Length: 243
Image 1 (cartoon, rainbow, N blue to C red):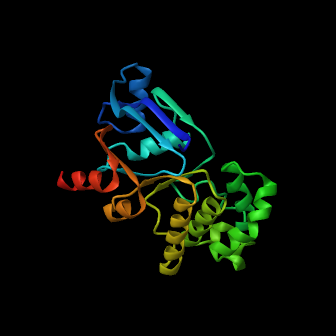
Image 2: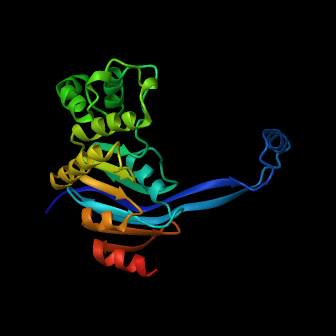
């Protein structure tokens, strides 16, 4: 039996929302000083419990505001839950906002090492993978150019190449398979299929049920911050479409 790599037990995430409709800084400051701030609690996630084994490809579906992105941020370690337990075995590469770890004043070459270090990889390992990352990104001519001069598509291609060429143990993907132009999209899609078939554990969020059906072996449907249904991809997607 494959080992458990992600385990969530009764995980909940609450946010405090300031109730006043006066959104000016002055108004907020006055209420703060007068201790008149009033908050309401928003339950983004409530009682989430599931286990994922090595190599599983898990689809996360649900309408906007269902808690999908919050769940991914908790699994990736970006957020700590308000309540509950999260156990992760293996390095996690979150592809939530491609390029979010880049320094725009540094070159593409320098950002490979910076972003790779943020993802937890050693300089020695990144040196070994450098040529492979550059070749996949198709940005050889621009490696010594500051990325402030890159287009958004070029930055996404570089970020995708760093995140996926290093063979993550747990990969978190949020609606970002459409990277770059048509030819690069095809290549990135093939790379995702390669990772999913090679033992990488994947969490994949998408509003495209056809992608979920194609790529995922199991699906978790979130509704109002709770698990509405969990199971085989076709069965859960069919139920979601009927709703």
